[in-house]
Length: 213
Length: 220
Image (tube, rainbow over all chains, first blue to last red):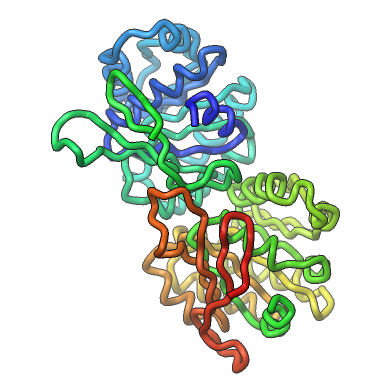
């Protein structure tokens, strides 16, 4: 399945992209964005830690005009300590006071207003720091407001059963064991309620290529 | 087999524990014929699951003969807003109180229905990530106290591992939908085995029932 076909298939669904590490997940996002050249997107970035990491990884990847265009035009919602961003246009800044429910409602309102495909970054930290009870309630509040395509980029894979309950699709990214070193990843469908998207291997990728397997 | 199974599950509290939602929906869509579906009341917990059910109904039975029935299927929703994208909303319970009190309210709604109805519960597996086992058992106690004879089928997917033993303790029958071990995760497959894992029904002992292959349910 070509990447643009996958992107079209996932329209309207809530997708978790779950990787063993931040590098693999953002590398895949980079490829996903390259299949969305015509779209305006919204980024919701939680925490200064994740905002910095996202910027550093994307900046280190080979330059691509399409990605550059998307990043320049992306609307950014930042939840953190200050309203500084290093790419895109700040749509809203939400000070992180630890009130997950209120934050989810506010994000839901913004997503509805923009009506764009939305990428969430940094919420793996929430999986570690928040109680699952609070996460379910926050997700419920978010979905009570917003109905757009959402990609949650999660760099932590020890809660797959829980994540499968929250999302329609899980795309899993794992390091291959072909080489002990280097950044080669396999990408497969771990969970899906989409009839046309079975549980199956999709791609192998490194920094310079993504190809179907 | 379908008729026998439905008959054997009458008045029972049944858990269908599936490896994923897609296989659970395939089981339900094939298992439930028109007559069975007419007796069903859906009870849905959470916006998360309500949205998923909407998408699954749209894609899986969008053009089948069951469509006209599911369009009017009675729904009781526990969530944040009183809107649903399918069926007819029978009752809405706002999810802003403890699950024990929610189940008390739910029980008093369900007890008003005539005998012979089948309550199918969706999304209640999330509770295993939200509440302690003792709270879940108390909630079930409240529900059972008000609806002792109603046929109840709980569709549960990917439960918190620590809660599997309380599920066995709570239900009369457990139907398991498990990914077939003949197929591994890296293969293109939606192949599952469906079997009775636990049962207090004399005529329904632990046994194999079906195999799910894609969207088909095949009797074994």
